[in-house]
Length: 288
Image 1: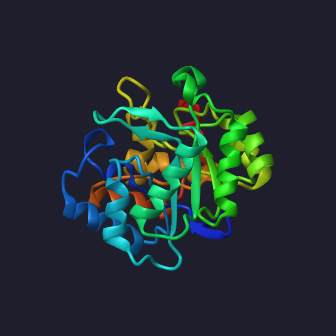
Image 2 (image 1 turned 90 degrees about the vertical axis):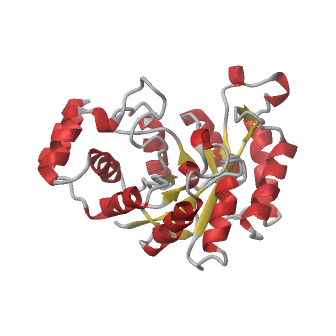
């Protein structure tokens, strides 16, 4: 299956994540403004009709690039953003979980993307111990504000991000979420129970860190020797093999690989045509 429903819209299973378009640390302007614009336009040309972004990527930078490159947007393009975080003037990531902050973030996304409604907005959760006391807002209260924004027409659909199984169950019941965005990859399958829950409810599962953690010293798919061996056997790159493995796990998985490079974009989009054999899959799964 090459598409899967994200809310009421069937999207291609390989979309585009805008997180890498801003400068280093997802902060400030891009290294190459012209290439960032070209990457966005080429992604759509190659069939990406699901673009994942956030107001706090930059901040504002990713959204403004998307608007410059693609507005007026194609009718079939689904813009997905997320709320629940913000940045300080040094680029640090901070929770922004209070209902009024969620509302303000949605309105900021509408403004910078220049749309009247966002296709999907993911509620980004934070561990309580990572949050200041004024940010320790119950999940139910956060979801209630998201539902209000949907009822007002500012948000068409709601998703949830960085959520455990119990939180996803609450979000399904209270808000009818259409997707879950969690960390998952060949080398980090700790969220398999959430993936299975999404499969039971036919909800899209959108893995971030699809090639392993972006943090130094953490496992990376492309560094795995078996992945490298399979890639060489297939005439593919290790990154392509890691992405193809994810697509093979379930038809509900939607990918949003991000890049600021046209060459890497072409590689990522070509994963749709990469078919792993039973031998390839067995080798990869034995490796981890």
